[in-house]
Image 1: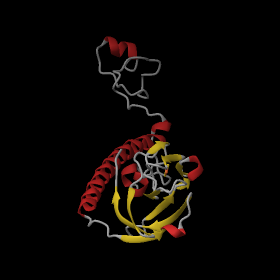
Image 2 (image 1 turned 180 degrees about the horizontal axis):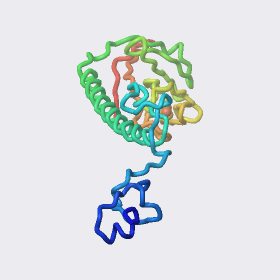
Image 3 (image 1 turned 135 degrees about the horizontal axis):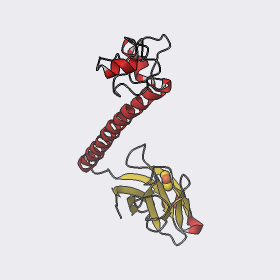
Image 4 (image 1 turned 180 degrees about the vertical axis):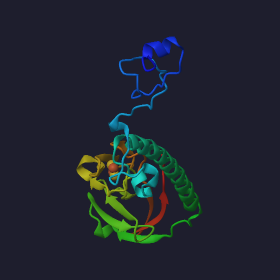
Length: 218
Ligand code: FES
């Protein structure tokens, strides 16, 4: 019989591999594995809400896919963007630090400025002043034994204002519990990485002058 698959097989005739071809009913495993269209998991197919193919979707929808396959793709692309951004930010940060230190080196020495008087500063007290510019807050401290100390008030961690605690012999930064030694300005606890800059002082009679800033790395 012409349509009998077995007899066609025995006569070595060409078999139509399509599963719905006449005379193929009942046959299994008679076609090559790659004959049929590969089936795809519906979960694995990207379909826009208007059912047009992805290539015809607007750019914003391709960039912000909402289903799983494209979402993975976007994640990889975003990761690459993230790496590029991080690298760019790192390079910009290094450039900023280099430019800043160059500017600092070229900055003219701060001028001598009167910042207070001994008569207005009792033993065991502290006051604030600005030096070398109006936006640079500093602390002037007179210890109980009469010693004068002055520091930049900006914490060397993230620039919060440090608070003198004379009884405890420290300068405390409330932002992240940084602690500096009152007598030396050195960082002794918490996250601050460097000592506080020292404001150099000169006393003439009753007058107290700031004459320079000494920055330290250790
Ligand atoms: S800003 Fe001072 S410890 Fe962080």
